[in-house]
Length: 129
Image (tube, rainbow, N blue to C red):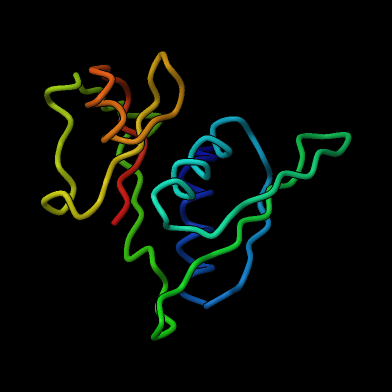
């Protein structure tokens, strides 16, 4: 089961339904992706509530003045059956720089902009615009 794709689909569906917040199971990978989305301005904030299991993450979605979801599209690139890796010079541009990619590197979960600045490559998890 691809938990990252499930997480991205939950965000996409909650935005389409114009929900204020979204509850999803927490993991280090999901927390890293949510942190990047918050830093880039695509979600308001997120909180992690720890419990006896893995915890619950609550994401507060962000909308523009017209009520449209800020995230136009969020899609999985690397899947469990087909991993996509890229060196820092080969990280693809998303929508001519309008969007960004989220990468899993040896320095943790970073955006494509941070990866290019740090000159590190890694697995391209998803693309957001």
